[in-house]
Image 1 (cartoon, rainbow, N blue to C red):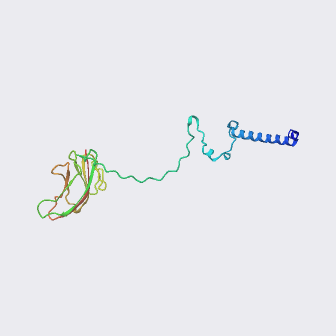
Image 2: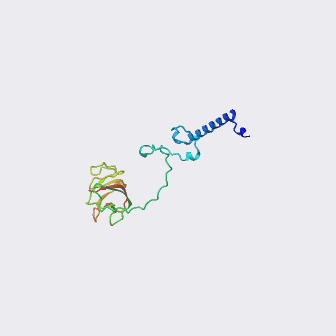
Image 3: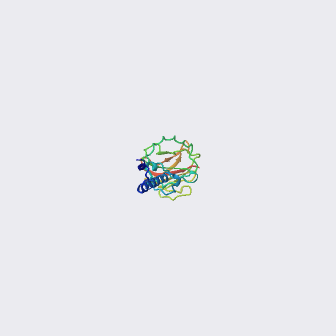
Length: 214
C-alpha cells in the first residue's frame, strides 16, 4: 500500500498541471494590466468602452490659465417686449412776457355788415397772442399788391420784418375806405381795422396779417 501512494505522477498529469499554471498566470497578468492605470497609454481607450458612470464624470479641458473656450454664435433676436406705460406729463413751460425778437405772429381777419345811418363808423379790433416790446410800424398791402422790404410775404404766406406789422388785403367789396390804426390802449398789444365809410353802406373785408418782434 505504501509503494502505491509514493508512485511518481504520470506524464499526462504533469503536462495538465503545467497548462493550468500557465493559464492562470496569463489571466492574472491580463487583469493586472487592465486595472493598472500607469500602463494605459493616452488616447487609447474609446468612449464606447467606458461605463455610463465614468462618462458622466468626464469634463472638458480648459484653456491656458483656466480661460474658457471661444463663445458660440449669437442667437436669434427675441420678440419685442410690450410697450411700457406712459409717464406723467411734465408741467407746462412759462409763457413769454413779450414776443422774442425775430419771432413772428400771424393771423387773419374777416368783417362784413352794413354801416349805420348815423353814429360811429365800423371798428374791428385784433389782439396779438403775445405783447410786443415796442409798438410796430403799420404797413398795408392792397389786394394783389407787391411785396415790400418791410412786408416780404403775400396774403397766402404773410410775413413781416423785425418791428413791422403787415396787413395783406384779399377782399374789399366796392373798394371802400380801409384803414389800420394802433390799439388805443397800447399799440404793443394789437391793432384795429377802421372803416370810415358812408352811412347805410354794405361792406365786407378779408385778409391776413403778420407782425415780428424786435
